Amino acid sequence: MRELYDYIFKRRSVRKYYKELCLSDKDLDEIKQDIEKLIPLDSGIKTAYEIVKREETTAKFGEYCLILYSENKPFYLFNAGYLLEQMDLLLASRDIGACWYGMAKPKTKRTDGLEYVIMLAFGKSNSQGFRSNVSQFNRKEQAEIWEGEFFRDICHAARLAPSACNTQPWRIASDSTGIKVYRKSDIKSFIPLMKLPYFNSIDMGIFLCFLEIALLEKGYSFDRQLKMQENNPIGSRLIEIAEYSIK
Image 1 (cartoon, one colour):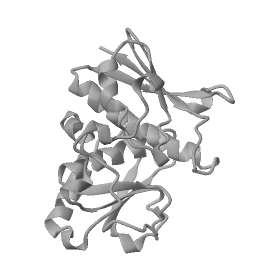
Image 2 (cartoon, rainbow, N blue to C red; image 1 turned 30 degrees about the vertical axis):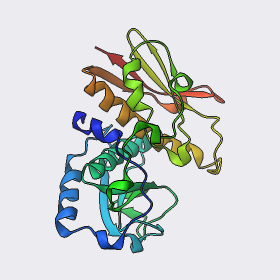
Image 3 (cartoon, rainbow, N blue to C red; image 1 turned 90 degrees about the horizontal axis):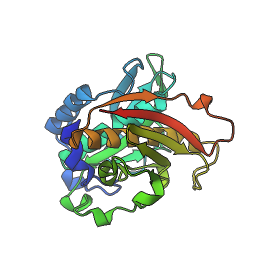
Image 4 (cartoon, helix red, strand yellow; image 1 turned 90 degrees about the vertical axis):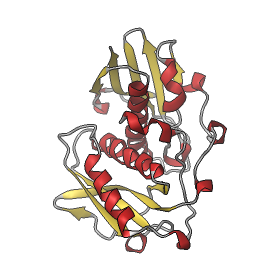
């Protein structure tokens, strides 16, 4: 995934598309080939993808939608975010704009025993649809999300991860041996309180994707251990998501 690093600084949630910039059959074939290259966070979770015209969903923008279906197993939401964020960056590499679309629904809610999780709306975009400068990001300062003085060289890129309503629920603690990643549970958002853990869990998968791309870019090797959220004390403000042992 290291080859995706530069596109972290380019991608943007694109919501405006132009009819004169329609995707070609060649574009769609290349996107399907990219799907085959996606690396799961947990290879034990079955997933399936479908590309449909936007009109076949309730999405209000985009030319097409990439729909992700998954087994409902531990870590499946993290896995969904981790997978589709790779696709988000791959689309940006092809000058194809994309946007996570949490509130839209496809016509088909289940396929082959797998349930609908989330979709990306996408379509051809012009160069103004992407970022050209880090100052164009609206993200929390490093000091607000990162505790500890170790491995801060990866925070610059990792903190740019997108999230539902820009809630940025990740918090990180580092020491000389590695990194612990947490989800902040008391986030204030326009998202209904009952739905926030669902979308923020997908967000955490997105963040882990950015974090690992940054680690690889900086030359770190690592072992990752995902944490069962149910093991955290009831009412925890910070819920441990993953622990990285850095080599």
